[in-house]
Structures are given as C-alpha cells and as structure tokens.
Length: 147
Image (cartoon, rainbow, N blue to C red; front, side):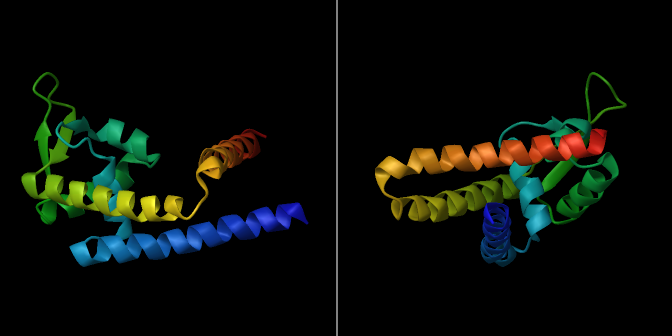
C-alpha cells in the first residue's frame, strides 16, 4: 500500500512539475526541453558539448539537436575550443543569459511560495526526504540496468 502511495505521489509531482514548467517556459518561446537545456548552461562561461551531455544525462546526439534549436533562436553560440579544435564549446548569448536568469528567478519565486506554505520546522526534513527518495530511485534503476 505504501509503495502505491509513493508511486502516486511521485506521479503527481511529475505531472504538476510539467504544468509548472510549461507555464514558465512557453511564454518565453522555448519548450520545456529547451528550457532545461538552457538552465544547464553555466551563466557566464562556455561548456563543452560532452560536458553538457553528461550534465543533462543525455546522449551527445540528443544534446546536439537541442543546442542546434537554441542556436537558431539566438540563445546559444557554438565555437571551437581554442586548445583542441576537435572539441566544441557552447555558451549562452546575451539573450540566452537573460532568459536563463529570468527562468531561474521564476522557478526560485515559485518554489519559495511553495516553501512558505510548509511550516519552517518541516521544510528541511521534507527536502531531505525528497532527496533521499530521488537517490534511491536512481540506485534501484542502476541496479535494474546492471542485473
């Protein structure tokens, strides 16, 4: 019974998170996937395509397609690494930095409002529990893939 409650709770978190993501990202002209990719970029520095793929946990080809879309929107720039021409560096344009900051602020504001509804003495234990559940989901998934 508890497993079913956990599953239902996580499902609802995912479903409402998708709604929140669309609410904040789509008015800026980016899809949720594009928005998360944009938020994975360092704000004021370049990142290699392979490091970005690792950070997002996605295949290089998938990240390349997403970066292509962001480049075409003028949010990201692509350039060769000055030390190794085989490596492609990507970074946010000024427009991309502005959108990154706006999205980060929007989400920070939203989740601050959620936290404000939780009694102060329960905030840290709830977040600790969510982090633990996340770690355990990852652990069990990794075990399933190995076995």
